[in-house]
Image 1: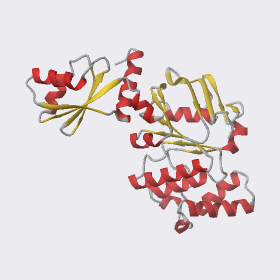
Image 2: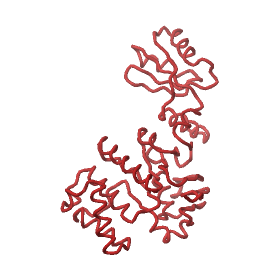
Image 3: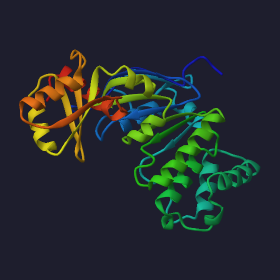
Image 4: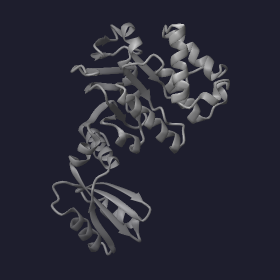
Length: 315
């Protein structure tokens, strides 16, 4: 396996008028892994993917993808990458088989290669029973499998997926991720954007984007272990009163309600965060049970995006 990363971005920036969609993004994506982009809508995930595959020109900076500079060598890159957009982009008035045949011809596969790879894809992505169905009649999960089959017909080294599971049910999402790990085992590098925390935890490595800025980068487990705050879980019969009481404390960075529980992020400078929270609530006349708990990836996301916004003087 090449030691050169699959993707290396250097100060990548994209502006649309006054809007900075991607802001001096620098990162490396090693080969043979699932690398995730986590962020809300508007965080720059889709724009970054389009920059990396040469569909958009950067305002500043550059990127090297599979040994090719983009956008300068984007044409040479096309045969090495697969790209699956958030919205279904195949032809709804063609059948499953016709769509795959059309895509195979675009990639210049020979007649023998087309037949072999379409047959393999139909089996791998459980599309055999839908060969003659028009794509427009398929369910969300079936469309997703068809899109993935089309994006991988030419066996790309790098697969770029832009929020591919945003319109499918949980079981279809799990099946889809099983297919992704199968591709990684075969040597494919995958870059996938998502706003689902459970999907982000599946990635080997993760970049958290916030308003075009890289807020954090690393394996999910490491991001959770190195989070610069502590998490306290509070159980109370008056959760809204708990939230109002703690919101004035400068050592409390965030409060999220989950039913009757509160998930409280406490600054790391506080030695005993659970005792600190309990003391504040007791002085306010509130009865509550407070316990320090391990951080989740959602806690990391809240913490690092808060820091990013504060660093830019926002909020």
